[in-house]
Image (cartoon, rainbow, N blue to C red; front, side, top):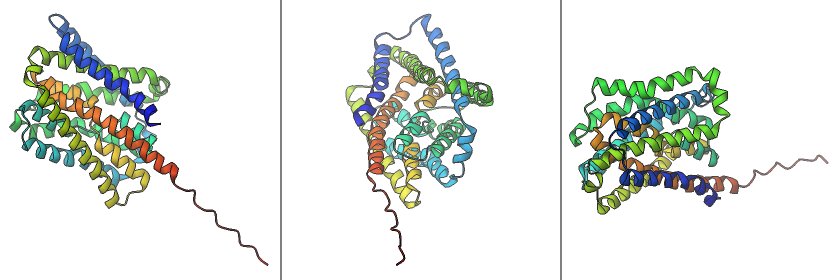
Amino acid sequence: MIRRLLATIEPYILMLLATVLLATVLPPRGVGVPIFDIAADTAIVALFFVHGAKLSRGALLAGARHWRLHAAILATSFVLFPLLGLAITASGLPAPDLATGLLFLTLLPSTVQSSIAFTAIARGNVAAAVCSASLSNLLGIVITPALAALLLPGTGGVDLSFDSVRAIVLQLLVPFAAGHLLRPWIGDWIAARKRLVTTLDRGSILLVVYTAFGAAVTQGLWSQVGALELAELVGWCALMLTLVLVLTGLIARAMKLAPEDAVVMRFCGSKKSLATGVPMAGVLFPPAQVGVVLLPLMVFHQLQLIACAFLARRLADAVEAEPEPAMPRAVTSG
């Protein structure tokens, strides 16, 4: 079962790696640069429009009663993660831009699609996962830039200007809201075309990654990041993911969450969204810096998919292995 699950994830990971390789060997140049920029912006707008249209109000209302769970997940995403990021970057990464990228990824909201998918596999509370992941992404459009302006300037990061705020609102929030408002008319059509939505979801990310990395390569990305720096980055990302997975489990136990809600805490609380991070980095950072900043997010994204695939299957097997409750014996009267 684990092999089957990983087989569905591995092609996308390979496509991400192939995209980085393509951007390294054949980055957009000349007249191709503005063409790819426009295509990437259009794809992200379409992606967030579709995510808004997919958002079920019924599922949100069903999951909204778990407010303690949602508050804990938001605190993990926007408080615990940034604290870990600050602690790790304070230890000193070799490349300052990698440190900025590592801290930037800790400020991002949770994923939506994979969080819900892994929660379902692990027999968790899917309605609560939909609510929590969607809320994290919606609030993240505001919280992430604010945290970036607060925490990143000292590490060579961003200056949150009116233009960057407007770009985030127009590229992410407006299409998301428009899609959700149009859900009564287009929601069923989109729900019936899961393959098209998946293609748009992954294709738009690949396109934006190619555009961002291509711009970084032309500015000398791989002369700034060597094999040693890359290996160290993988180690830091793996350490941070391990710590968060352990801590979310401990938090769920301390809160005495029901097992199905503890699953939501683990998966929604431990993830970071590539779909939100890529376009936001393009708005908040200069083109020459975007590729380096996104490198930690891409590494963490792939590690979280692999780790959560194993964890989800393990939790599901544990649920299936639980014995059925014994039926009370009938009492017969003599």
